[in-house]
Image (cartoon, rainbow, N blue to C red):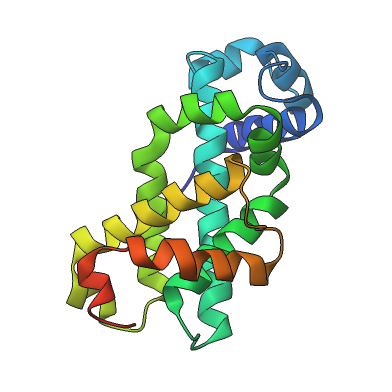
Length: 197
């Protein structure tokens, strides 16, 4: 896959900067066009409306985020529990991502709206990352449906941790691991609880 053309990359880069500075709802396509150094027509040739541009930015940033998570977990080597570490690192990396985290903290309603539209793509990105971090052959052994179920569980619980306040603190890596062991692990598909990575 070759990726977007240079003009589209400039538009997406400009949109990230504008969204980071002003929030998703306050940015107009004209603002993005001005920052990207292109005309509005150039943007409209690639994106029918602002919602499509927002979706493309989220998709691109999710691809980057999940690739970063996978690379870091793979580099870390064997963990006490792949599931807990994948969950923990997902939360920590998301919080460090300037635009995605800002969207969660400043515009949680928009997050829920966009989740309805782009959730399947997020599951696919997370499942791709899991296939990279699992030991060779593990994803094949448990099957694609189970990998997708795990990706779904990670995303649902991560959304809960990121959006909802709770009695148990989930700020530090140790807090997140404790939450994952207590709440996330018991929710995993039976096929995953029966076999370890």
